[in-house]
Structures are given as structure tokens and as C-alpha cells.
Image (tube, rainbow, N blue to C red; front, side):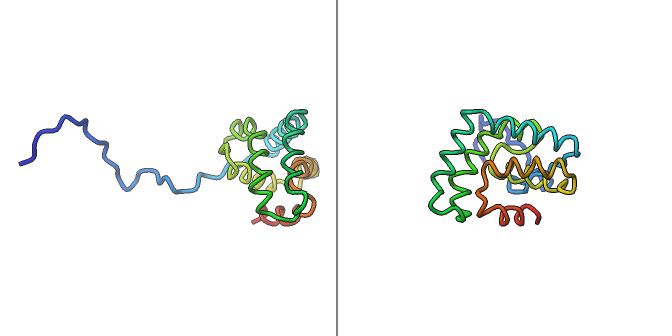
Length: 141
């Protein structure tokens, strides 16, 4: 009844296949991994070419330093680009979602004084003071 086809057979997709829309599994970092990741991130952010990129991105939102949407549109893409080597090394996606997950993973160890100080130092490089409290609350959820 059906004409023969020369197309290769299609793979069978079952209900158990991975859902492309499912959130990736959260990455959990140990305290030592968190310290290592933060130290590497801060070193990347301190490179002159990256400091220049971050300064230019933050300068674009200077007129509205408390505008979270500008932070997300102008600064976070640059921060993500700069942090990509660390994100991928520790299993996070190389996108803004991965950066936010990384920051959340760091916040899980906020009771550790060294991690807290390193985390604040990292966030201060790309989160304007006017938004730091809002971002910290978002990451604590």
C-alpha cells in the first residue's frame, strides 16, 4: 500500500527520552571547589581586557544603576563571556543561566567567611551596589 522509501529509519523516541525543556540538574560545589572557582573567576575578571569590558558594560547602565533589566541585558552577557572558562570547568552552562546557577551554588556556602568574601568580591565586579541586595535575594531562593 505504501511506496518503498529510501530514507533511513528514524530513531524511536520514547516517553523516557530527555526533555529538551527540562532544567539542567543543579551543580553542587564543595567548599574547596567553590573557593577554587571563585579564585579563578576573580583572576579572569582582573585581567585588563576583561576589566575594560566590564567597565564599558557597567558604564552603559550608569544612568539607571538600579535597573535590573539593564543589568541582565548589558552586564550579565559580558560577565558570562568572561566567566565561561570557569563555568564550563565546573559543569555550569556557558550562558547567563549558568552564571546565575554558579552564583547560587556559591551562595550555598555563604556561611564560610572566605567564600562569602570571595563571592562578594566577584559580584561587586559586575553587580552595581544599587542592585546587590536584590541580586542576593534572587540567588537565595
